[in-house]
Length: 443
Image (tube, rainbow, N blue to C red; front, side, top):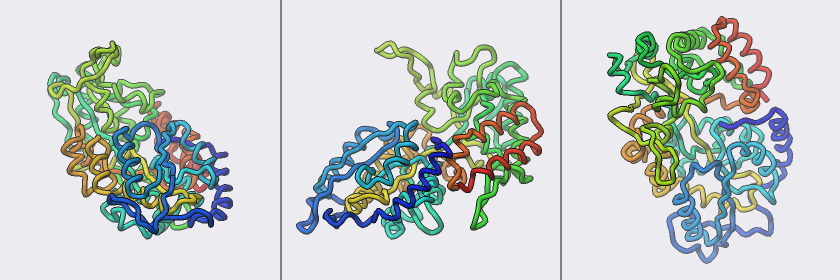
Protein backbone atom coordinates (compact mmCIF):
# COMPACT_ATOMS: atom_id res chain seq x y z
CA UNK A 1 0.00 0.00 0.00
CA UNK A 2 1.05 3.58 0.13
CA UNK A 3 3.81 5.16 2.08
CA UNK A 4 4.28 7.97 4.52
CA UNK A 5 7.45 9.89 5.25
CA UNK A 6 8.82 9.84 8.75
CA UNK A 7 8.09 13.53 8.93
CA UNK A 8 4.49 12.81 8.05
CA UNK A 9 4.35 10.22 10.82
CA UNK A 10 5.58 12.83 13.25
CA UNK A 11 2.97 15.25 11.95
CA UNK A 12 0.30 12.62 12.44
CA UNK A 13 1.47 12.03 16.00
CA UNK A 14 1.37 15.74 16.70
CA UNK A 15 -2.11 15.80 15.22
CA UNK A 16 -3.24 13.46 17.97
CA UNK A 17 -3.10 16.39 20.37
CA UNK A 18 -5.42 18.31 18.09
CA UNK A 19 -7.65 15.31 17.65
CA UNK A 20 -7.98 14.89 21.39
CA UNK A 21 -9.69 18.27 21.51
CA UNK A 22 -12.03 17.48 18.62
CA UNK A 23 -15.05 15.80 20.14
CA UNK A 24 -16.38 12.89 18.11
CA UNK A 25 -19.86 13.64 19.35
CA UNK A 26 -20.29 16.57 16.97
CA UNK A 27 -20.35 20.31 17.48
CA UNK A 28 -23.04 21.92 19.61
CA UNK A 29 -24.80 23.50 16.65
CA UNK A 30 -24.86 20.37 14.50
CA UNK A 31 -28.02 18.28 14.84
CA UNK A 32 -27.64 14.53 14.53
CA UNK A 33 -29.79 11.67 13.34
CA UNK A 34 -30.66 8.31 14.78
CA UNK A 35 -31.53 6.95 11.34
CA UNK A 36 -30.13 3.57 10.40
CA UNK A 37 -29.65 1.76 7.11
CA UNK A 38 -32.51 -0.11 5.56
CA UNK A 39 -34.27 2.39 3.34
CA UNK A 40 -37.17 4.73 3.90
CA UNK A 41 -37.45 8.36 4.95
CA UNK A 42 -35.58 9.71 7.99
CA UNK A 43 -37.64 9.85 11.16
CA UNK A 44 -39.38 13.03 12.18
CA UNK A 45 -36.90 13.47 15.04
CA UNK A 46 -33.90 12.96 12.78
CA UNK A 47 -32.05 15.80 11.10
CA UNK A 48 -30.53 15.27 7.68
CA UNK A 49 -26.74 15.56 7.59
CA UNK A 50 -24.53 16.23 4.61
CA UNK A 51 -21.34 14.19 4.89
CA UNK A 52 -18.23 13.39 2.86
CA UNK A 53 -16.69 10.01 2.05
CA UNK A 54 -13.13 9.69 0.78
CA UNK A 55 -12.35 6.68 -1.38
CA UNK A 56 -8.80 5.92 -2.46
CA UNK A 57 -8.05 5.45 -6.13
CA UNK A 58 -10.71 4.19 -8.51
CA UNK A 59 -11.14 0.67 -7.16
CA UNK A 60 -14.75 1.28 -6.10
CA UNK A 61 -16.90 1.16 -9.27
CA UNK A 62 -19.19 4.09 -10.10
CA UNK A 63 -22.27 1.89 -9.70
CA UNK A 64 -21.37 1.28 -6.05
CA UNK A 65 -20.68 4.96 -5.44
CA UNK A 66 -24.07 5.84 -6.92
CA UNK A 67 -25.71 3.26 -4.68
CA UNK A 68 -24.12 4.77 -1.57
CA UNK A 69 -25.26 8.26 -2.50
CA UNK A 70 -28.82 7.15 -3.22
CA UNK A 71 -29.15 4.91 -0.18
CA UNK A 72 -27.69 7.52 2.17
CA UNK A 73 -30.13 10.14 0.88
CA UNK A 74 -33.02 7.71 1.36
CA UNK A 75 -32.03 6.75 4.88
CA UNK A 76 -30.64 9.99 6.26
CA UNK A 77 -32.17 12.64 4.03
CA UNK A 78 -28.80 14.33 3.62
CA UNK A 79 -26.33 14.41 0.77
CA UNK A 80 -23.32 12.15 0.52
CA UNK A 81 -20.36 13.66 -1.32
CA UNK A 82 -17.79 11.13 -2.51
CA UNK A 83 -14.25 12.26 -3.30
CA UNK A 84 -11.71 9.93 -4.89
CA UNK A 85 -8.17 10.56 -3.69
CA UNK A 86 -5.25 9.20 -5.67
CA UNK A 87 -3.32 6.50 -3.85
CA UNK A 88 -0.17 8.55 -4.26
CA UNK A 89 -1.78 11.41 -2.33
CA UNK A 90 -3.56 9.32 0.30
CA UNK A 91 -1.16 9.65 3.24
CA UNK A 92 -0.43 13.36 2.82
CA UNK A 93 -4.10 14.19 2.25
CA UNK A 94 -5.28 12.23 5.29
CA UNK A 95 -2.50 13.59 7.50
CA UNK A 96 -3.59 17.13 6.66
CA UNK A 97 -7.36 16.65 6.67
CA UNK A 98 -8.16 14.21 9.48
CA UNK A 99 -7.29 16.56 12.38
CA UNK A 100 -9.22 19.47 10.80
CA UNK A 101 -12.87 19.29 11.84
CA UNK A 102 -13.84 21.77 9.14
CA UNK A 103 -12.26 19.81 6.30
CA UNK A 104 -12.05 16.22 7.46
CA UNK A 105 -13.79 13.51 5.50
CA UNK A 106 -16.47 12.08 7.78
CA UNK A 107 -15.70 8.55 6.61
CA UNK A 108 -12.57 7.50 4.77
CA UNK A 109 -10.95 4.52 3.14
CA UNK A 110 -7.31 3.86 4.04
CA UNK A 111 -4.87 1.22 2.81
CA UNK A 112 -4.69 -1.78 5.14
CA UNK A 113 -0.96 -1.26 5.79
CA UNK A 114 -1.57 2.45 6.42
CA UNK A 115 -4.23 1.93 9.06
CA UNK A 116 -1.92 1.82 12.07
CA UNK A 117 -0.35 5.14 11.09
CA UNK A 118 -3.67 6.82 11.89
CA UNK A 119 -5.32 4.55 14.44
CA UNK A 120 -2.33 4.79 16.80
CA UNK A 121 -2.57 8.60 16.96
CA UNK A 122 -6.33 8.75 17.56
CA UNK A 123 -7.34 9.86 14.06
CA UNK A 124 -10.31 7.45 13.86
CA UNK A 125 -13.39 7.24 16.04
CA UNK A 126 -13.72 4.25 18.32
CA UNK A 127 -16.53 2.14 16.83
CA UNK A 128 -16.11 -0.89 19.07
CA UNK A 129 -19.77 -0.59 20.06
CA UNK A 130 -20.72 -1.04 16.38
CA UNK A 131 -18.41 -3.97 15.71
CA UNK A 132 -20.97 -6.75 16.06
CA UNK A 133 -23.63 -4.74 14.22
CA UNK A 134 -21.26 -4.24 11.26
CA UNK A 135 -20.35 -7.90 10.97
CA UNK A 136 -18.29 -8.79 14.03
CA UNK A 137 -16.27 -11.96 13.74
CA UNK A 138 -17.52 -12.55 10.19
CA UNK A 139 -15.28 -9.67 9.05
CA UNK A 140 -11.89 -10.65 7.65
CA UNK A 141 -9.90 -10.74 10.86
CA UNK A 142 -6.46 -9.79 9.58
CA UNK A 143 -7.89 -6.46 8.48
CA UNK A 144 -9.77 -6.03 11.76
CA UNK A 145 -6.46 -6.42 13.61
CA UNK A 146 -4.76 -3.94 11.26
CA UNK A 147 -7.39 -1.33 12.16
CA UNK A 148 -7.46 -1.97 15.91
CA UNK A 149 -5.50 -0.67 18.86
CA UNK A 150 -5.76 -3.21 21.64
CA UNK A 151 -9.44 -4.04 21.99
CA UNK A 152 -10.58 -0.82 20.29
CA UNK A 153 -12.04 -1.24 16.80
CA UNK A 154 -11.18 1.88 14.82
CA UNK A 155 -10.97 1.02 11.10
CA UNK A 156 -12.77 -2.05 9.79
CA UNK A 157 -12.16 -3.96 6.53
CA UNK A 158 -13.50 -2.39 3.34
CA UNK A 159 -12.46 -4.94 0.69
CA UNK A 160 -9.70 -7.48 0.21
CA UNK A 161 -7.61 -8.85 -2.60
CA UNK A 162 -5.38 -11.91 -2.57
CA UNK A 163 -2.03 -12.73 -4.08
CA UNK A 164 -1.98 -15.89 -6.10
CA UNK A 165 0.27 -17.65 -8.58
CA UNK A 166 -0.56 -17.10 -12.26
CA UNK A 167 0.86 -19.48 -14.81
CA UNK A 168 0.91 -20.54 -18.44
CA UNK A 169 -0.81 -23.87 -18.87
CA UNK A 170 0.69 -24.30 -22.32
CA UNK A 171 4.27 -23.77 -21.09
CA UNK A 172 3.80 -26.09 -18.10
CA UNK A 173 2.52 -28.75 -20.53
CA UNK A 174 5.40 -28.11 -22.92
CA UNK A 175 7.88 -28.52 -20.07
CA UNK A 176 6.19 -31.65 -18.74
CA UNK A 177 5.48 -30.23 -15.28
CA UNK A 178 2.41 -30.10 -13.07
CA UNK A 179 1.08 -27.44 -10.72
CA UNK A 180 3.22 -27.69 -7.54
CA UNK A 181 1.64 -29.05 -4.37
CA UNK A 182 4.14 -27.72 -1.80
CA UNK A 183 6.48 -24.75 -1.54
CA UNK A 184 9.64 -26.66 -2.47
CA UNK A 185 7.98 -27.86 -5.66
CA UNK A 186 7.36 -24.25 -6.70
CA UNK A 187 11.11 -23.89 -7.10
CA UNK A 188 11.58 -27.37 -8.56
CA UNK A 189 8.88 -26.93 -11.22
CA UNK A 190 10.11 -23.54 -12.36
CA UNK A 191 13.79 -24.57 -12.24
CA UNK A 192 12.93 -27.46 -14.55
CA UNK A 193 11.20 -25.11 -16.98
CA UNK A 194 14.15 -22.75 -16.80
CA UNK A 195 16.70 -25.51 -17.44
CA UNK A 196 14.74 -26.62 -20.51
CA UNK A 197 14.49 -23.06 -21.82
CA UNK A 198 10.70 -23.22 -21.72
CA UNK A 199 10.11 -20.43 -19.20
CA UNK A 200 10.88 -19.18 -15.74
CA UNK A 201 9.28 -17.60 -12.69
CA UNK A 202 8.99 -13.81 -12.88
CA UNK A 203 10.39 -13.04 -9.40
CA UNK A 204 11.14 -9.31 -9.12
CA UNK A 205 14.12 -8.82 -6.81
CA UNK A 206 12.41 -6.07 -4.80
CA UNK A 207 8.96 -7.62 -4.67
CA UNK A 208 8.80 -8.13 -0.91
CA UNK A 209 4.99 -8.15 -0.82
CA UNK A 210 5.15 -11.42 -2.73
CA UNK A 211 8.37 -12.70 -1.16
CA UNK A 212 7.24 -12.43 2.45
CA UNK A 213 4.95 -15.38 1.75
CA UNK A 214 8.05 -17.59 1.99
CA UNK A 215 8.77 -16.10 5.43
CA UNK A 216 5.15 -16.56 6.57
CA UNK A 217 4.98 -20.13 5.20
CA UNK A 218 7.94 -21.14 7.38
CA UNK A 219 6.42 -19.67 10.54
CA UNK A 220 8.41 -16.45 10.46
CA UNK A 221 7.29 -12.83 10.52
CA UNK A 222 8.54 -9.32 9.86
CA UNK A 223 8.09 -8.21 13.46
CA UNK A 224 6.32 -9.20 16.68
CA UNK A 225 4.65 -7.20 19.46
CA UNK A 226 5.23 -7.96 23.14
CA UNK A 227 2.49 -5.73 24.51
CA UNK A 228 4.61 -2.62 24.73
CA UNK A 229 6.76 -2.43 21.60
CA UNK A 230 7.40 -3.96 18.22
CA UNK A 231 10.61 -5.86 17.46
CA UNK A 232 11.80 -6.91 14.00
CA UNK A 233 12.16 -10.66 13.49
CA UNK A 234 13.74 -11.08 10.05
CA UNK A 235 16.65 -12.73 11.88
CA UNK A 236 14.53 -15.42 13.53
CA UNK A 237 15.40 -18.97 12.41
CA UNK A 238 12.01 -19.35 10.73
CA UNK A 239 12.33 -16.08 8.80
CA UNK A 240 15.86 -16.90 7.70
CA UNK A 241 14.74 -20.32 6.42
CA UNK A 242 11.98 -18.66 4.41
CA UNK A 243 14.32 -16.10 2.89
CA UNK A 244 16.89 -18.74 1.99
CA UNK A 245 14.17 -20.60 0.11
CA UNK A 246 13.12 -17.38 -1.64
CA UNK A 247 16.77 -16.67 -2.54
CA UNK A 248 17.02 -20.13 -4.10
CA UNK A 249 13.83 -19.45 -6.07
CA UNK A 250 15.28 -16.20 -7.41
CA UNK A 251 18.68 -17.63 -8.23
CA UNK A 252 17.41 -20.76 -10.00
CA UNK A 253 14.18 -19.66 -11.67
CA UNK A 254 13.79 -15.90 -12.02
CA UNK A 255 13.48 -14.21 -15.40
CA UNK A 256 13.07 -10.85 -13.65
CA UNK A 257 15.81 -8.49 -12.49
CA UNK A 258 17.01 -7.56 -9.00
CA UNK A 259 15.83 -4.00 -9.62
CA UNK A 260 12.28 -5.02 -10.59
CA UNK A 261 9.43 -4.61 -8.10
CA UNK A 262 5.86 -5.89 -7.85
CA UNK A 263 4.52 -3.22 -10.21
CA UNK A 264 6.16 -5.10 -13.10
CA UNK A 265 4.59 -8.51 -12.37
CA UNK A 266 1.00 -8.03 -13.50
CA UNK A 267 1.50 -8.70 -17.21
CA UNK A 268 4.59 -10.89 -16.94
CA UNK A 269 3.16 -14.11 -18.42
CA UNK A 270 1.62 -12.41 -21.46
CA UNK A 271 3.17 -13.19 -24.83
CA UNK A 272 5.82 -10.67 -25.79
CA UNK A 273 6.27 -9.23 -22.29
CA UNK A 274 9.88 -10.39 -22.04
CA UNK A 275 12.63 -10.84 -24.61
CA UNK A 276 14.31 -14.22 -24.50
CA UNK A 277 13.06 -16.81 -22.02
CA UNK A 278 9.39 -16.07 -21.27
CA UNK A 279 7.74 -16.06 -17.87
CA UNK A 280 5.75 -19.22 -17.30
CA UNK A 281 4.83 -18.14 -13.76
CA UNK A 282 4.25 -14.90 -11.89
CA UNK A 283 2.70 -13.85 -8.59
CA UNK A 284 0.23 -10.98 -8.33
CA UNK A 285 -3.10 -9.99 -6.73
CA UNK A 286 -6.36 -11.39 -8.04
CA UNK A 287 -7.13 -8.22 -9.97
CA UNK A 288 -4.14 -8.96 -12.25
CA UNK A 289 -6.69 -11.11 -14.10
CA UNK A 290 -7.73 -8.04 -16.09
CA UNK A 291 -4.14 -7.55 -17.33
CA UNK A 292 -3.47 -11.15 -18.34
CA UNK A 293 -4.40 -12.95 -21.54
CA UNK A 294 -4.12 -12.82 -25.30
CA UNK A 295 -3.29 -9.28 -26.40
CA UNK A 296 -5.35 -7.69 -29.17
CA UNK A 297 -6.48 -4.19 -30.07
CA UNK A 298 -9.95 -3.05 -29.02
CA UNK A 299 -12.23 -0.80 -31.07
CA UNK A 300 -10.23 2.23 -29.96
CA UNK A 301 -6.98 0.68 -31.12
CA UNK A 302 -5.74 0.08 -27.58
CA UNK A 303 -4.01 -3.20 -26.67
CA UNK A 304 -6.14 -5.19 -24.23
CA UNK A 305 -5.81 -8.62 -22.66
CA UNK A 306 -8.50 -11.26 -23.08
CA UNK A 307 -8.31 -14.19 -20.68
CA UNK A 308 -7.82 -17.53 -22.42
CA UNK A 309 -8.58 -20.37 -20.02
CA UNK A 310 -6.93 -22.89 -22.33
CA UNK A 311 -3.65 -21.01 -22.07
CA UNK A 312 -3.66 -19.27 -18.68
CA UNK A 313 -4.36 -20.48 -15.16
CA UNK A 314 -3.92 -19.67 -11.48
CA UNK A 315 -3.38 -21.47 -8.17
CA UNK A 316 -2.92 -20.58 -4.53
CA UNK A 317 0.71 -20.60 -3.39
CA UNK A 318 1.18 -23.96 -1.62
CA UNK A 319 2.62 -24.20 1.88
CA UNK A 320 5.76 -25.93 3.12
CA UNK A 321 3.88 -29.18 3.78
CA UNK A 322 1.15 -28.66 1.21
CA UNK A 323 -2.10 -26.85 1.71
CA UNK A 324 -2.03 -23.09 1.22
CA UNK A 325 0.76 -20.71 2.25
CA UNK A 326 -0.04 -17.44 4.03
CA UNK A 327 0.26 -14.59 1.53
CA UNK A 328 0.16 -10.83 1.92
CA UNK A 329 -3.39 -9.52 1.53
CA UNK A 330 -4.11 -6.43 -0.51
CA UNK A 331 -7.08 -4.20 0.16
CA UNK A 332 -8.34 -1.42 2.38
CA UNK A 333 -9.90 -0.51 5.69
CA UNK A 334 -12.53 2.14 6.35
CA UNK A 335 -13.38 4.22 9.40
CA UNK A 336 -14.95 7.37 10.80
CA UNK A 337 -12.80 10.43 11.39
CA UNK A 338 -12.46 11.32 15.07
CA UNK A 339 -12.90 14.96 14.01
CA UNK A 340 -16.22 14.48 12.24
CA UNK A 341 -18.96 16.93 13.12
CA UNK A 342 -21.52 14.43 11.86
CA UNK A 343 -20.96 11.19 13.78
CA UNK A 344 -24.50 9.90 13.38
CA UNK A 345 -24.51 10.46 9.65
CA UNK A 346 -21.11 8.78 9.44
CA UNK A 347 -22.40 5.80 11.41
CA UNK A 348 -25.40 5.54 9.11
CA UNK A 349 -23.06 5.38 6.12
CA UNK A 350 -21.00 2.66 7.81
CA UNK A 351 -24.18 0.63 8.32
CA UNK A 352 -24.97 0.96 4.63
CA UNK A 353 -21.43 -0.06 3.62
CA UNK A 354 -21.57 -3.15 5.83
CA UNK A 355 -25.11 -4.08 4.83
CA UNK A 356 -25.81 -7.30 2.96
CA UNK A 357 -26.75 -5.32 -0.14
CA UNK A 358 -23.49 -3.40 -0.41
CA UNK A 359 -21.27 -6.31 0.62
CA UNK A 360 -22.90 -8.38 -2.11
CA UNK A 361 -22.33 -5.59 -4.62
CA UNK A 362 -18.62 -5.53 -3.71
CA UNK A 363 -18.43 -9.27 -4.27
CA UNK A 364 -20.27 -9.07 -7.60
CA UNK A 365 -17.78 -6.46 -8.80
CA UNK A 366 -14.72 -8.55 -8.01
CA UNK A 367 -13.76 -6.90 -4.71
CA UNK A 368 -13.48 -9.30 -1.80
CA UNK A 369 -16.22 -8.37 0.67
CA UNK A 370 -15.25 -7.38 4.20
CA UNK A 371 -17.87 -9.78 5.56
CA UNK A 372 -16.94 -13.33 4.66
CA UNK A 373 -20.57 -14.42 5.06
CA UNK A 374 -20.95 -13.05 1.51
CA UNK A 375 -17.76 -14.61 0.18
CA UNK A 376 -19.62 -17.36 -1.67
CA UNK A 377 -20.94 -14.74 -4.05
CA UNK A 378 -17.39 -13.48 -4.56
CA UNK A 379 -16.13 -16.99 -5.27
CA UNK A 380 -18.91 -17.55 -7.79
CA UNK A 381 -18.74 -14.33 -9.79
CA UNK A 382 -15.26 -12.83 -9.35
CA UNK A 383 -12.48 -13.83 -11.72
CA UNK A 384 -10.64 -16.70 -10.00
CA UNK A 385 -12.76 -15.88 -6.96
CA UNK A 386 -12.56 -19.35 -5.45
CA UNK A 387 -8.75 -19.33 -5.55
CA UNK A 388 -8.61 -15.72 -4.32
CA UNK A 389 -10.91 -16.56 -1.43
CA UNK A 390 -8.79 -19.56 -0.44
CA UNK A 391 -5.70 -17.36 -0.49
CA UNK A 392 -7.42 -14.58 1.47
CA UNK A 393 -8.54 -16.94 4.21
CA UNK A 394 -4.86 -17.72 4.81
CA UNK A 395 -3.55 -14.18 4.31
CA UNK A 396 -1.46 -12.02 6.64
CA UNK A 397 -0.70 -8.32 6.82
CA UNK A 398 2.32 -6.22 7.66
CA UNK A 399 2.78 -5.27 11.35
CA UNK A 400 0.08 -2.95 12.68
CA UNK A 401 2.81 -0.72 14.07
CA UNK A 402 2.82 3.10 14.22
CA UNK A 403 6.08 3.32 12.29
CA UNK A 404 5.28 0.85 9.53
CA UNK A 405 4.46 3.56 6.97
CA UNK A 406 7.87 5.12 7.59
CA UNK A 407 9.48 1.73 6.91
CA UNK A 408 7.65 1.51 3.60
CA UNK A 409 8.63 5.07 2.73
CA UNK A 410 12.28 4.27 3.40
CA UNK A 411 11.96 1.17 1.15
CA UNK A 412 13.71 -0.96 3.74
CA UNK A 413 11.99 -4.16 2.65
CA UNK A 414 12.79 -3.51 -1.02
CA UNK A 415 16.45 -3.04 -0.10
CA UNK A 416 16.51 -6.20 2.01
CA UNK A 417 15.01 -8.38 -0.70
CA UNK A 418 17.26 -6.89 -3.36
CA UNK A 419 20.33 -7.61 -1.23
CA UNK A 420 19.19 -11.21 -0.77
CA UNK A 421 18.46 -11.53 -4.50
CA UNK A 422 22.01 -10.37 -5.23
CA UNK A 423 23.27 -13.40 -3.31
CA UNK A 424 24.07 -11.85 0.06
CA UNK A 425 24.28 -13.92 3.23
CA UNK A 426 20.69 -14.08 4.48
CA UNK A 427 21.52 -14.36 8.18
CA UNK A 428 23.85 -11.36 8.14
CA UNK A 429 21.46 -9.27 6.07
CA UNK A 430 18.55 -10.15 8.36
CA UNK A 431 20.36 -8.74 11.38
CA UNK A 432 21.32 -5.60 9.46
CA UNK A 433 17.78 -4.93 8.30
CA UNK A 434 16.21 -5.82 11.65
CA UNK A 435 18.24 -2.92 13.06
CA UNK A 436 16.90 -0.58 10.39
CA UNK A 437 13.32 -1.68 11.01
CA UNK A 438 13.67 -1.35 14.79
CA UNK A 439 14.83 2.25 14.37
CA UNK A 440 11.45 3.19 12.83
CA UNK A 441 8.80 0.63 13.67
CA UNK A 442 7.62 2.07 17.00
CA UNK A 443 7.20 5.56 15.58
